[in-house]
Amino acid sequence: MSKFKYVIKRTGAVVPFNAERIANVIYRAAVSVGGRDKEKAAELAKQVIEIMEEKFEDGYKPHVEEIQDIVEKVLIENGHAKVAKEFILYREEAARRRKEDSRHFSKPNEVIPWKKVWRSLDWAVSHNLHTVETTNERIRKGEFPHIVHEAESFYETQLDTAAELIKERSAKLKMVMVSGPSSSGKTTTTLKLEQRLNKMGMKFVPLIVDNYFFDLELHPKDEFGDYDFETPQALDLEMINDHLKRLADGEKVKIPYYDFKTGKRFPDRTSLQLHEGEVLLIDSLHGLFPLFSKEIPTEQKFKLYLEPLLQMKMPDGQYIRWTDLRLIRRMLRDSVHRAYNPEQTLLHWHYVRSSEKRNILPYCNTADYIINTSMPYEVPIYRPKLLEHFKEWEEKYNGDPLREDAYTRAARVRKMLDVIEPVEDDSPIPDDSLLREFIGGSTLNYH
Image 1 (spheres, rainbow, N blue to C red):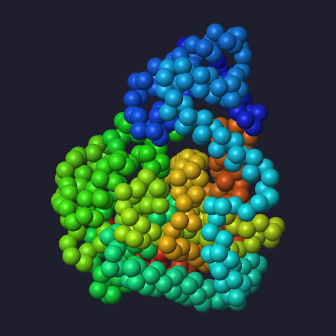
Image 2: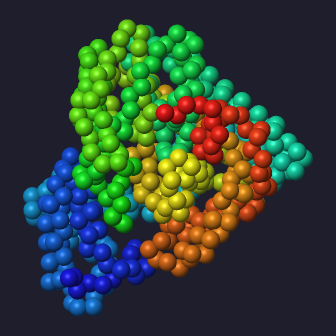
Image 3: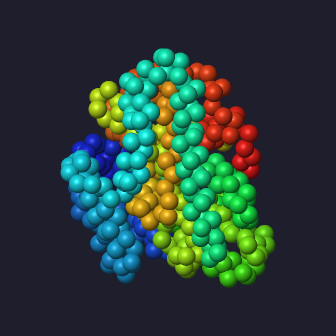
């Protein structure tokens, strides 16, 4: 039993001390450099606690930075230089992000695709959909079906462009990677892209990346002890690279199968081979992550990046955040297709975002083409579905130091939904719309 009851967070909030988090953070750093020994992580965490108990008196509330200093020391003294380096880099990166957040927009953010954002803003202005006020005005005039048509046409035009770019490179192409953060619309976009390219004479073979997850017991956990499926290190990147290289060379490989019910991966389950004129089609969060396809020459892969880059300003002058759109999308999809409570999605979103910031967003500008998957009409549709929930969560988590993230997001989304004109009738939305992936009613086959 540890003598520590509380820890001080960087915000100054005092929260209950949880010794298991130390083992989790050590294991996550180890996983980042290829290590997967949970017992060793637990043993090192025990050493950290012992040093803390020697160093600090009873009743002392250690600061999170003090604990992390000791973690660094223990890792280095035990000969785990690589893990220590990864841990130090993670701390430095987190500190840099906090500093940048505090300075706001003092310099351009390199992880934002500015050119695409400008084009999206230009489109929104020309269609009177660049502010909540102009959008509300159009809805009140009965123009919601027109807004839907305009938004869907903009998305479909981008898909046409992506298909043409891929076709142009088809002679040397071995794989197309559709990537982007959670709920950016990868599944629908992949299906629609495949339909277009099939008409152009290209043949695709899907590769299900989820089959490359490590066994659940080898997964890193987040700070609340939840298994983290969002990090690229949850995937067997070494095996993925080996299989991609062999497939590109025309070899036959045996793809594993991952059983989500048991959390186990079964090797050598399904034979796969690329024949003449066939191209791999890969839908993955981490398609742009450098280690995902490091063995594949650039000319053999086409990288597509998706993000709902909505350009709509709120009455207070702030733009609607893309991450909030994706949070809502995931809530709706998970509640419909995965029997997952929307509140759980809110509580898990902190580590979804943490992984995105480290492993997905920094590589968006390495894509061959970017598609804006936002629909300006989606916010009015969300209001009747979720506004009351966000009001409840805002009230529930207000003042809870362990759930600051959930409170901040709930308050911000509630504010957004409060000011938009609600639309309950979703019949103008096409049956094959990207948004149907999240709100239900799609005629596309997602399985």
